[in-house]
Image (cartoon, rainbow, N blue to C red; front, side):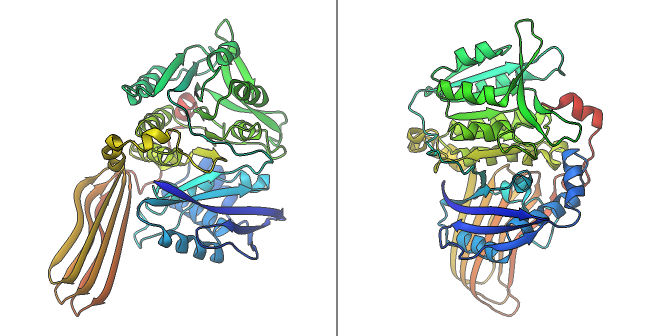
Length: 473
């Protein structure tokens, strides 16, 4: 899928107000910015989200508040118009240029625009829509570079589990990554156990991509939790904790020539309220690395493994970073209990104009079937509808994007157009587009008929706090 940039810039924060403008879109750009305000209850929702004690209705409420702030009326109108102008094989990349730390630290990956009257479904979260990619862009005076690789690509996967940290299921993560890339001759994978600073630098020489699996965190330097720096937790020669601060990691990977970084550790996507480059992922952008996937909060071990597995499976088919991140989110969403919030924890930082790492694989026709398996599209055209027309009818919807387009001249009396009939859905996104010139008396249009969502999709998710601490990365 080819993504077209829809660039939103947020700037000039003052007393809870800031300005938002569209600087680039498929159609036009804004002449004057809109001023927006931080909404009430936002801080409470954010606190509950970070603690993983937010109910599903409150998560939607948070998403709507974020959308009101980042997508005020003019921006929203341009967004919908841009989406409508896309061809079926294209998507829209929301490239966020966030000039103020108070805006940059908000979890924009939970943006919610309700597409249906039934708001007990996950469809309105933009980050779960394969046609929409949410990317954070750091505006710095360095050429953005490219994520494209010359084959064979060298991928280094490093594992660290210091003795002082809770144990993680790194063996399963290694197994899943190896399985996802099994048979992909264009990728040379090097697994490094008990990762130390020295082993990292040696292994990453000439590598295109680095994946870190292990613990990470934010090292606060004051009791007020306003100033600090991010770090990944490596091991020393004895297997004990050896934090690698953000600046050291960024400079090491830059010297090695790494172009894409995957950080599976907690809080690798956050920063403090003082220094824009205190976070791990932002600091990687600062030294010229074109793209990084990071975690803005703590994340369950199981969710991080599911995300990584689906992420690499998508990349191995030649899909872009944008599509691979969405695929990973949907894999998390299908897990059940962790689905409540974990899918929004991963963040994609990318300054390059294109997210395709494997251009040769993306053009390989033998992989087209796998790529289409990630999204199903049905198109129907009828001049006059006298009975029932159904686009897609399935029992359990797959963890993918289903798109149905029905173009009908006239729905006669007794005719019924049904975009999608689904028995149940645990994860995935459904689009039903119906274009009808005339509906006769008794004619009927139904976009989506959904009997039930996943067992946990409409209930509050309040996981045991001890489990969060034990299983976080």
